[in-house]
Length: 139
Image (cartoon, rainbow, N blue to C red; front, top):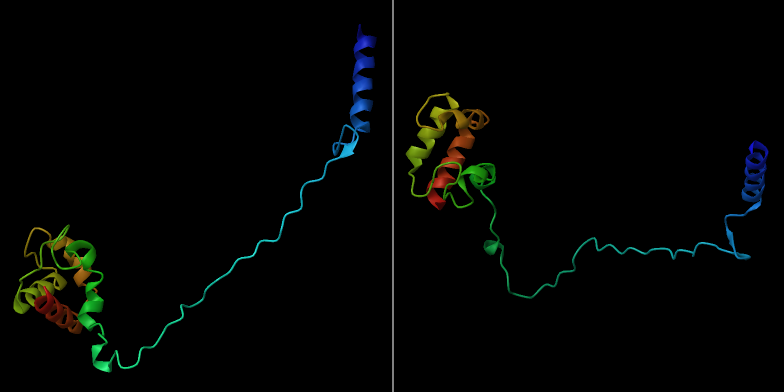
């Protein structure tokens, strides 16, 4: 029995080592050649100038307060409508400036004061003025 099993094992070993895995039924199987892939990039969009349709005054430049408000919008909303933070619409210049200054000085002036302390600590006095102007004029 052992001799028979040994003979089968040797036969299978010889048979498998003699086989070419790329040949099936006498024909050679080769993988298909891949076509090179072409990728097109458009680095800029072409623009068309229309004579007389724009003036230098029509271009809006973001104010310093508007640029600074971008980080405020995640809690107070893009239009100051509130969300996580309170609604800023209709607030006066002195109210906004007073609150931001109080937060910067780590004073507790409302339920969410602690949340604002870290944000206001990053603001300079000029930033507080710019933000107060922007919020009171635009919301």
